[in-house]
Length: 256
Image (cartoon, rainbow, N blue to C red; front, side):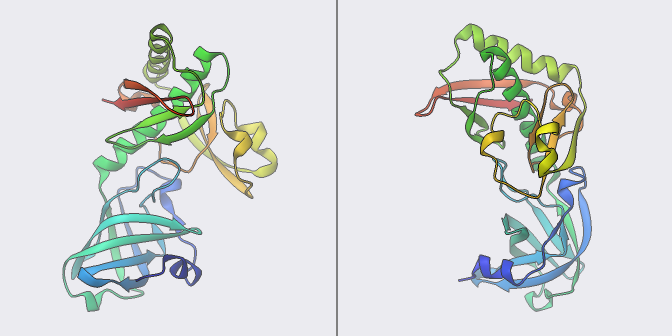
């Protein structure tokens, strides 16, 4: 069995291009290492990647790694100590040709990525709308910003029907206003100056720097997820249900 942590220890940190340009759909790069399992499956590390790993409530990207001689389908993407590990299955070609220093092309499953981008940005907008209706920042206990079951779990009593109606209206007002979404890197000492309306800032692990996603006039939240560049790209935020939970309530949502 492949030891993922051992892979990370012996591999250089991956350049994570999805953090700088979430709209990048293809990438030429090099394989650093490949570790084979039975059944034509392997763990690959690359010098750089466009594939977002499962983290921060967002599911991993899928897609393909290929060159003219072979093609691998990505089944899962993991981030282990800043090394992005791609778990793949060989679709065609000779596995013996898949080796370190090989030139490959990464091709993103764009439809899946773009849906995640819209849902994740919608989640930040819902945090704002919930805070506005409750009159305070409401802590999020857990979240999933990916289909088929996107939700935010809040540490509060469930909203009334009237409150929920207002939350939906407030959220979609932000969407219709087509506000700018940007992300900047901030050192620890500057974080509290840049982040705002961020519900979980107090429990954020300490780091040398943070990537803060800023929706103009809405919030600035430390986040390594992928987001749209304008709120209007979301289309519409649809609340599909409210579910009581042990910590408060889950707000299930989708985008069209």
